Length: 525
Image 1 (cartoon, rainbow, N blue to C red):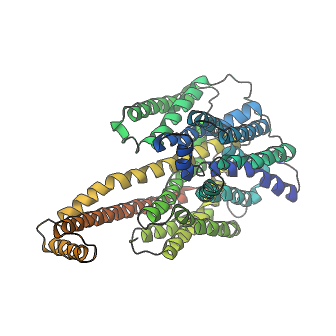
Image 2 (cartoon, rainbow, N blue to C red; image 1 turned 90 degrees about the vertical axis):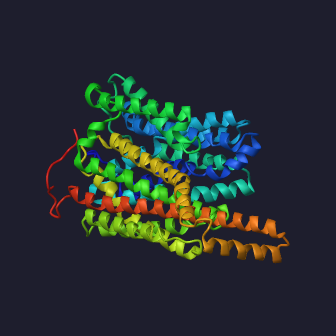
Image 3 (cartoon, rainbow, N blue to C red; image 1 turned 30 degrees about the vertical axis):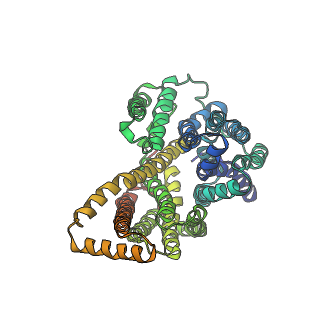
């Protein structure tokens, strides 16, 4: 934690914190708000739906490149200046996205918007870590958690409503008043951070290149891989190779060659910080994968509308917001590690229950399970963030927040990509298994086809031959639905295993004793 904390009153601290979360809320909202608007964008700008997906991909790639270097940029140009410039670029780009006359122009300004928004999350987290004393840092991170939990849930609902009633351009115009308010309020209230002594050091161009190529290509592979049939696509294969080579070079260069690395990977020698980054990767892997799976299940399998599918997530997010203050209160009385394990056990049980979803499941059951999962997330989200920053040297919070955000971002992207691939590829496996256990000569199949054909012949007016063909086609559709249902069960089972495997890791964190002294001294170099 930073040793140079502001002397502001408690009232001013919370005012500054409230102002600081406006910008990252907009940024996180924009990662999901455009998803449901893609058909409107494609139709209005005379593009195919596949081409319009670049509206999402371009933003994510730019965001992924800036996020890990935001701490380095903050150190060189000053945190407050960087923060204000990021808000300004994000807001201006949002305006130009809203008035874009063609898809290429829209993609260009989405890239700029992603560059502006990439540094907002880690910089906000670093501001809170430096601003609040240790005894109140849990409450500050609870406030920050509101941003990263509520915004992704509101995004699809707001995007769908604005696109339906006002037009897709308003999903970008929405950022303008919020961005203007965030800029001037932060300019007036945000304190200056201590100057970084490395701000005049030579620029690590090799590190910047490694991050741009490695993470940019990786985000492209994760976002476009399934749509392009993964490594059957030359573009995906090339991007994957470039990403691997660039990331291996980046790790070697930053650890062993760079005197002033742009990505301070030696922070991972800090035990608590390294464990927190690893756990953040996998917890966000599970959380965002679940957030992607439930709307897809309700929309594709149960026939819910897009808005109804989005609303499945809302009660869980609001329940999480109610549980977060309780977690802050519990952190003063219960070992942080116990809270993390308890939260993971709750999410494990929720994922276990979700493996038993059927086509007859009702809306209330899905919402209850989402609320149960969210309550588990509430128990470990803030303790994990607090432990991540608990043993860092003064002046390291900007670099640490960038690295922590990188692990969180990668976990989210990889989780969504993996479960989407499991859904597509797993259907073929399960369908083969189901068909093998139901051979054409089976009496059950013949009876089912005959019963359905008789119904179609009697009530739909089909000829006997046509009714038999339709009956067989309907049974094949049902087999496909059951195969896909088994795929969803596989996905939630994977998330359950991830939560179980993470639980014992929490006990390796070092925590402070009740009386104040640390169990041992472990400080990042």
